[in-house]
Image 1: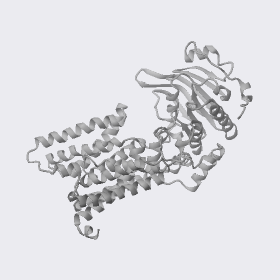
Image 2: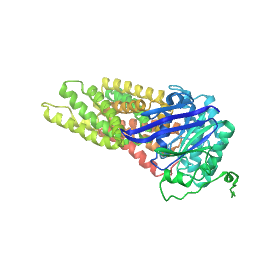
Image 3: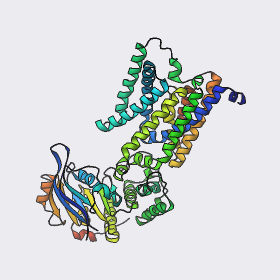
Image 4: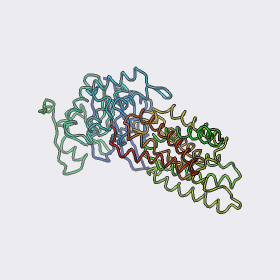
Length: 256
Length: 266
């Protein structure tokens, strides 16, 4: 499997000497889900922004598909931490998904029929075709999240960066969302780097887990290796947690 | 009606008013969606400083106001980003500072005889051939800019983080939009006045957003409402011998209040 993301000895600071990321060493392969776990302020969003090329590291190297982050942007889809809250912004679901094509369309050009078809296709894959004419602001939190993932997928990325995708989403929608990501990885060969402070559900999906609190406290497969000692070092003492092991993949929700 | 068209100053006011109302309505769409309604007021008042500065330095006042306001609008954008403040905080400071500068210069200049009332509230008589030309050029420029970068402005207004991550020149787009707002507001001052120039920068899109949730319809409605209020307001100002800024602003805000009486259209 080829390397999607390679991070070597990464150091990032907003103020001189105040390191938010300290000597990170990470890899992500094709068709792999890497979950970044850590407390708020632990550097998860900083790492994602560095991978996007929005922040420049002071030291170390980030390669995305073998390229510097800025050069790899067309291959990367991004879902930021806060979903846009612009009140009654007058766009439909299809308009929002079409926004994902804007970089491909280019400046001074209008989206073409092929862009519209791609947007509709992504909506179909995510089971959202019935919502395409609905105003975006009228959707529930879970639906909005799926639409924003559809927008990221409309750009036909090979790597998806998700920052706290479970924020503001109920547990059922969250479970559905993780299943969707798993299906995209298995069917389309999509690689996913997902930041979360939710230790529970994500470990059932992730192929690897990186526990980050400025430094990497753990990097490897989820499950038994994700010991209480590692989590305590990452999140601090006295935290309670619940781990899902592979048995949870077979858990089925009673609908209705 | 026909006899009004024979009056040269009314012809000028109608043509300049129509051009500006379309450009301001287009801008109002983004002003309201980005929550920067206060920007129009801030820029209009900074134009007062620009006019006073122009008079003191012996420059053409409208040109000095244009240059000064475009500069202030861009400084507001840059200062808000640098200081990590919301734009309205920075506008509040620039608004007072530039107006104060204008007041100080006017106070220190001897023989300053510009009709302050028409400047503050607009005047049909102030719209000459040069103002019509200015309004047409600026409106075309603003509409060309909005047309060329509409989808980029839309994405940047909806989700600035994703716009930046997808490689859009976000800072440049912000500065272009602020410059366009400054140009349209300063040219609009002749017709609407400093105090009321921002009326058409907010009310048309705010009203249109009550009536539709599709951006294509919101834009079209904003333009129609803005045009209707400008034409109606000019006629009313002529018949009542009143300042057109007041009649146009009252029409635009009146339609917004009326739209509140009806349920929001989904």
